[in-house]
Amino acid sequence: MIHLDCTIMGQPYRLACRDGEERTLREAVSYLDGKMCALRDSGKVKGTDRIAVMAALSVAAEFLSVKSPQGPLSDMSILEVKQKLEAMHTVLDHALAPQENHA
Image (cartoon, rainbow, N blue to C red):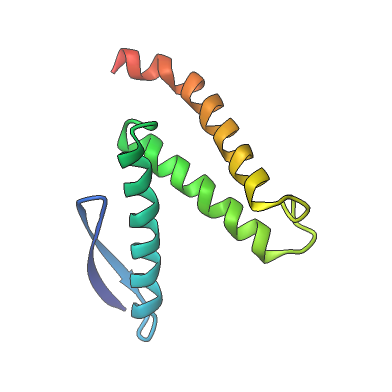
């Protein structure tokens, strides 16, 4: 097992992976960091937890649309997927707003 020191959205993480998987893990970290920083910088999503959830949903949607031609997003254009994600963001914003007011 190999340990890699990485940074995601300015926070340090020590991650473990198998020998030979370092490059893939670093690419994944870079991709996720880019997604999370873009969400943070857009100003539309506040809070690290919410940013992580939104980034995870975005990555999952991308994965599902590419992974399976019969997947739940396979018949949607990229624009439609983005619109669906924006709708999810709105729902989550409303659902999580009471939690933020009590924090």
